[in-house]
Length: 265
Image 1 (spheres, rainbow, N blue to C red):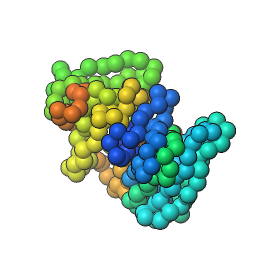
Image 2 (cartoon, rainbow, N blue to C red):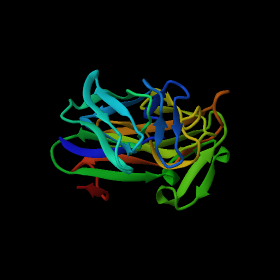
Image 3 (cartoon, rainbow, N blue to C red):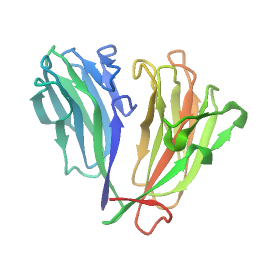
Image 4 (cartoon, rainbow, N blue to C red):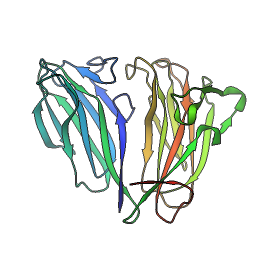
C-alpha cells in the first residue's frame, strides 16, 4: 500500500482533552497541563503516529499508550526546546486506533501536534487533489459569506452562522480530509460522508481560545474509488458559538485513479 502523513494540530477536534479545565491553550500553538492524570486522546485511522511537544526545565513526566499498550514513559524536563518527539508507534494494522497521552506528575507537560501515518491503495505514489471552498455547493447560498485572506487555503474561506446551513462537495478518491478553522465562537459541525453521520466540535468549550487556520477537522480512509459526497452542517448548541466554516478538502488516491493532481513523494 502507499503511505502518507497527516498533521493533527493540538487544536484539532481529533484530539480530546480531559478532565474539563485541566488543559489550557498556551497562545503559542500548544496545549499545556499541570494536572496529574490529565489526558489527551487521539483517535486515529492509520498505521502509526508520532506525538510532538516541548521540553522545559520545570516540566514533568508522561506516559503514552496506544490501544491500551504503553509505548512511552518519559520526562519532558530539559533545556527549553520545542517540537520534540514525545513518543511514537509504528507498524500498526491499517485501521482505527486510540492513543492516550497521560500526565504522570503534577509538573507541566504540553502537546504541540501529532503526525499520523496512514496507507491507501496499492504500493506506489499517493496523489493529492485539493478541492477549494469555491467548489462546494452552499445551501442556502444567501446564508454563507466569503473571507478572502492569505491565511486560508487558496486564500478564501466560506463561513456561516446559520443553524442548519450546509456545504456539500462530491469527489472520487480513497481518502478525504476536511480543513477549516477552529475558534471559541464556533458551533459544532455535523458531517455526513455518503450518509454516515458524525458530529464534532470546532473550537468551543475550551478547545481553542483564538482563531486557528488550516486545521484538519476530519479525515476518512478506506473509501472505494467511486464517487462520494461529503456534507457539513452548522450544529450550534447553548454551549457553543454560531459559526462554522469550510476551507478545503484534500482527496487522496493512488497512481492511475486521478489526473491533473500533485504527487506526495
